[in-house]
Length: 322
Image 1 (tube, rainbow, N blue to C red):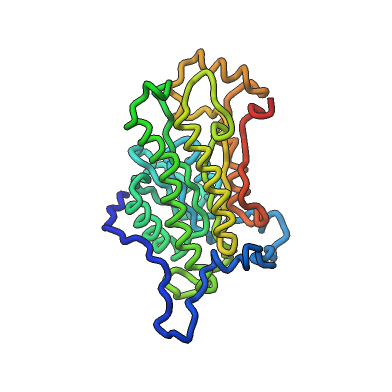
Image 2: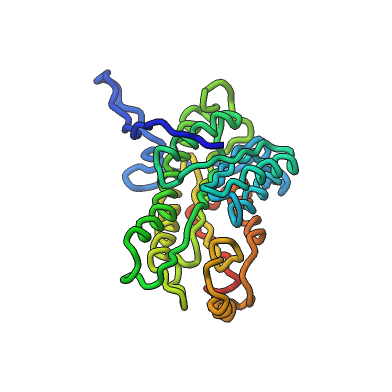
């Protein structure tokens, strides 16, 4: 399914009330602190205590970008298996349409695939709001997973157009996705956990969960391949999620996952001899499989992680432990 966005206006800040005697309503972001000190009880603990209830995503709506294959597709399976209705985004891999149909049939949830250009802020805004309205009038989980590699080696000799494309896809798109998803979570919070249309109270809603796919490359400088632009973009993703955790504390959690070397399509261009060097630097001696990330994304998406925000989870087979 292709969503064609209209021109979407920029979000305008809240305007003061025309009534001079009344103060403008304080935003949830500003209300979490008083004079630079966090207020007590900005959040509440979940009422559920059983693992089955804490890890259940029944009734929830999730969006996963870059989900036509690889990590994103594995995450979509994980969330759907836990009961979530899932929208998967792809760029050009139209097999995502078949994958969505398979997920829907296998897990008995709603799953649709959408072609969305994550580097277009207007397309992202329109897609997020349209999908949330169509998926039970709510949004609970957003996984910003779309990304591309740096493939031109030495940065001095690389094309600046390639640099801009890497940063636009790997960092800017995460900001656009967070902005669109966060606007919905703020609205749902401000309305007292009601649906986007305001027609009903949301079942099993405990705030939003934003999960960004970063990389261990946001913590290290990779060798023997040279990829400074990619590393910088992923470091930015980690700190963006950490900052949003503070900014959004009243209405959403924000975390990131930093995979190590994974056996997915994104590394197909890497020569076999380079991958042998990789394996020699990994205590586990191998690349990870996308399915080995399902658990950490499910944890962060669920109420089991209700007290987890602003964290980066490195899943790298021990690479960064050495």
